[in-house]
Length: 246
Image 1 (tube, helix red, strand yellow):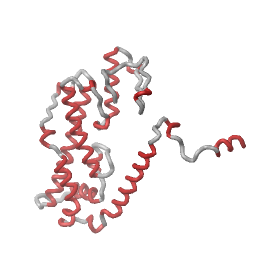
Image 2 (cartoon, rainbow, N blue to C red):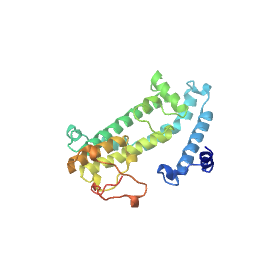
Image 3 (tube, one colour):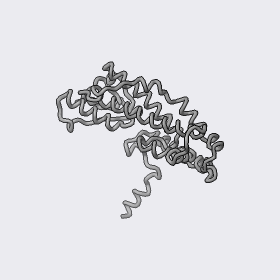
């Protein structure tokens, strides 16, 4: 037992990230995440008081105006309205193409719902719309610097509403580009970023199905190999997916 205790006492207080297959600089991400959490908590403490949560048109206009302006400057309604997805597109024989069409439809629907929500809040603030329980709940969440549950049920993104809106719009615009690449047959010819997607795990499943069909192998025989360092990838016996790197 003494030998075990001696060995344990010699271990460092901090675990080496390489023991878990993580890059050596992963601590930076942890510190950044913890710092963001602290900053958000401090914002929540000072953002709003119980008195300010009660509907006061002038006060609400002052507090909600920044996020409404952010939405107006980031939401590209015309670009999303130009996207045309047909039933034939959704029934595409290629699982990856079909996924992309469904994904862009999903993000467009979420953006429309958020736009309707913010438009209703603006209507109340401008005196052109009645304050309903739903609008009040969504506005109150924003006043608390939180993402309204009616938004979050469609997609669980950043906890901060400003970051949530920016990220959703970025994903939407990126997915429009994915659709263009699908239609030109060039999606998997170059790198793709999984951060563009709402459901990256579904994309990987679609990619497995596509690969199994192309190479006529059982889907359970395929293995996904990943590495932070591309040079360490062992490509022997691996299948090249048209130069695709995730």
